[in-house]
Structures are given as C-alpha cells and as structure tokens.
Picture 1: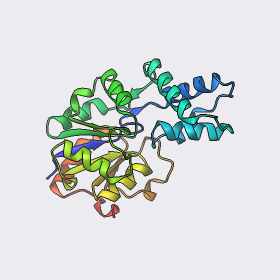
Picture 2 (picture 1 turned 30 degrees about the vertical axis):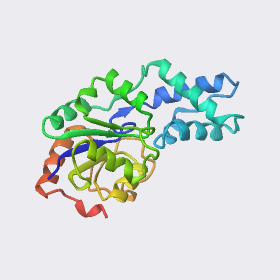
Picture 3 (picture 1 turned 90 degrees about the vertical axis):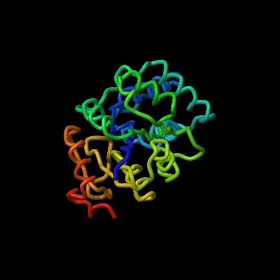
Amino acid sequence: MIKAIIFDLDGTLIDGAEDLHAAVNLLFAEEGIAPITLRAVESFIGDGIGALVARSYLHAGVAPENLAERIEQFKRIYAAQGYPLTRLFPGVFAALRDLASRYQLGLCTNKDQAHARAILQKLGIAEFFSMLVGGDTLSVRKPDPRVLVSAAHGCGAGIDEIIYVGDGAVDAALSKATGAMFFLYSEGYRAEPLDALNHAASFSDYAQLPALVRLAEEGNLPGRANQE
C-alpha cells in the first residue's frame, strides 16, 4: 500500500538553475571573478548550496580564503533575489493537486529549509506538502538514508509505503540505500544516461505521474525489475 509520495525539489519539481546561476555570478562579481555559465552551475546542483558554491569556485579556478563565509554570503544573495526565475516544471501543479487528494506528500531536498519553504510558497504549492526535510534539517543530507526515512515517517509512512521521485544520481543512490521505490523524472539536471540509474519507472511528463502511481499500487508497474 502506498501512503506517501516524497519528492526531490531542484530538477524534479522546479527549474531553479537560473536563479542559482545569477547568485553565483553576483557572488563572484564581489571578488572580481569572471562569471561562469548556466550549464556549469546546472551540473553542480543536487548536493546542497555548500557543494554548489565550492564547485563553482573550483570551476572558476579560485580558492577563496574563507569558503564558509562565502557560502553564507551566497545564501544571502540567493534569498534576496526572491527567486524570480524559478519555475515549476510543466504539469507539476496539476499532478501535485491530484496526488495530494489521495496521498500524503513530502519533500526531501538538499536545499536549506528556509529557501525550500520560500520557493514552495512563491510557486503556490506549499499547501500540498505535509513534511519537508531540507539539507539543514538533520545532521546528515542526501544520499544518507536517514533523510528519506525521516521524510517518510513525517508523512506517517514506512519506507516500503512510499514512492520517491527524483531526477539524478543522488536521488537514485538515496532510494537504493533505503529500498524505496524510485520514480525518475527524466527532464531534470541528470548528467548520467537514464539506464545508468536504478529506477522502478521513469517519466518525462507530469501528466503521466498519477497513472504510474496507480499502477505501482496495483503491482502492475512496467519495468519494476529495473530497480535493483
């Protein structure tokens, strides 16, 4: 029995790369560092803001004197922008509204809680979620299995009673570590070939997701053997 659907955020529900990219380059401008490309920033998304900032500096060939302070400054810049370019992927709102009528919905992201909550509110989807576990909620972050277990429990479900929906290698590793059923959204920031990531189902259009969930509940999900 499926009780809850847990979602990743960046690259799964939202396309927020342009705001992250803008914040990185504003941070760099303070130090006279040349801007980096959107494509580069997209490739750094998934392991939290700290990793994104560190990788951006590495990509730029710069070793900041105080990385921790620069990460905090990035957070201030990112929040102050107000996420003007962050948007839902097509079909997300309708799919969440449908699923929320039948299941508990949770969010499991490496983005800090404050940023995640602000984005959910701005995009009008906060009401659909009963649980949010961010990158700073626990002492660990994805792909540590405790993060997804916490999100599932917050939705009143065991790990075998959820579907986890994500877009990349960190999400696939998380689901594999917990044994949770994993649905892969193929239009996010994934760098790996689709077949390289273990998943029970993949989809490119959110209009497909409610039907896939129903098939999973019935035990009729095509390709279930793809998740080992």
